[in-house]
Length: 257
Image 1: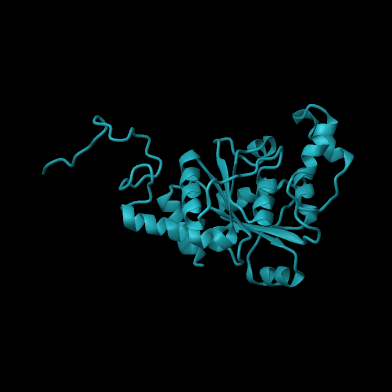
Image 2 (image 1 turned 60 degrees about the vertical axis):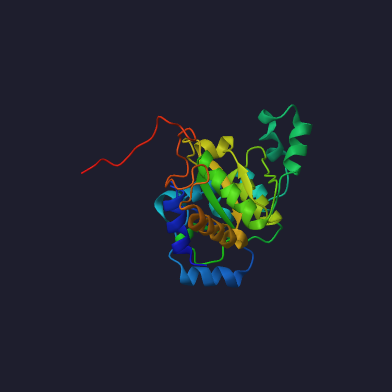
């Protein structure tokens, strides 16, 4: 895949505000060594959250790599298989649940990576030096809708059944897509809303890396057939144009010379 071309097209045609984030979960030391040798990357100065790692990728265009010591979020540590379920993890969900028994059941039903994870890289899609396990978009409602529609058409999947869990949107959302090889679309959790800087109300859309080319090709196919990337208003260059369909009032014509 030509990641640079793909990112440029997605940014322009969907009017994305953030770079798509390529995520790689490393379970093989040889792959880690290869990544480090080929990639200019940054590491967290202090332990922070996974969604904060992604800030550097989606806002600053930086590639970040870290292992367990750079992750300061217990929810992500649990989701990534870097710790077992413990009392502290259950208690951290108490405020969301009716009681601790419910909190325990809810945490136990989260998607988790298998044991053996070495480290994680997050990068702007254009700069990925690896095949992403997932591609994570932070986008608005209509951008999310376009990605979902293209995914359904490209993969012949309908309806979509995303997974929303308590207190683990960015971390748990990517784990679900990685493990199940399924599209995911979910709101920010209480942690990623503030810590991950999604105060604009961004929606998380996460696509399996191995399916990203299919989704991209579907976008290109639509552009050629409809004259633009917009599904809501074919021919319009803006995918989220907030104009009533066939409205007789909001119409413009080219002025005569």
